[in-house]
Image (cartoon, rainbow, N blue to C red; front, side, top):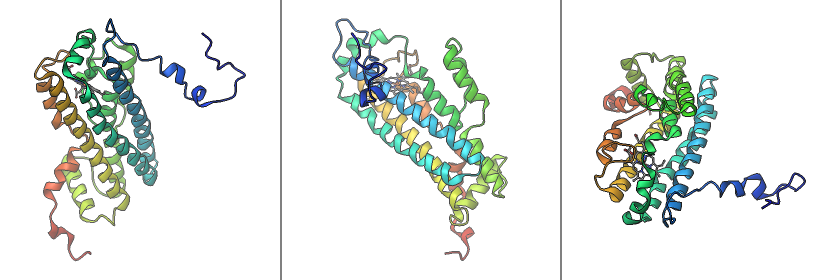
Length: 267
Ligand code: HEM
């Protein structure tokens, strides 16, 4: 059937956004189709689209930080955390699916798993949590491996941030220097206004991804209990181990060393 969107047709909403193509991209595997499989596909695809937008913003943020455009970088980071706030709560939509409805089609998904989400791994790598073991699990997927390897070998957002701190006159190469620099920034917010705002946005980025991980775990346990994952892990037990992942561990650790005495008489 012709789409009616031939070359000569004027631009329209459906044409610009490729809606006919978009709504053809949800192909269920269950036979006869299990009612909840459409929701399962749509929610994953929605996440992947938001991941794409987050990666777009983070790549630009790194470039802007390197160019010294901290205002512009912070503006993009604000966009990133706004999306992430939606991602954290969006996982609850899946909880409207009855566990028994999920089991109708779950076996068809084997051995596919969210563990293989290339863009989620890109998000982790570009933020600063690079993992060679995870990279190697993509060895058979040429497209994903190429993208992830590029991120693995390129400077991350964390690298860009510590570079900026260094250029502001605070030593930021070693772990201890980063803690000391962060304490100094947290002690004098106005003196380091743009960098202060940036560390606030970065710690929020970290916090929201952990919040997403936590909500995902709760949802998984509600659906599966302690069953093994389709990706081969032991499911909830494995996912709990990921809660400690942080992109900017020094920003968190510095809070322990902050004390009011360093502030002096400054108001
Ligand atoms: C009923 C729905 C879902 C279930 C039962 C589920 C279950 C699981 C399980 C058991 C794992 C551990 C790996 C494995 O052995 O498979 C996992 C990992 C993962 N899932 Fe889900 N998941 C669901 C929905 C989602 C959604 C909507 C997303 C959104 C992108 C998602 C993203 C991920 C990611 C990124 C990982 C890797 C986490 C990490 O290794 O740090 N999952 N999922």
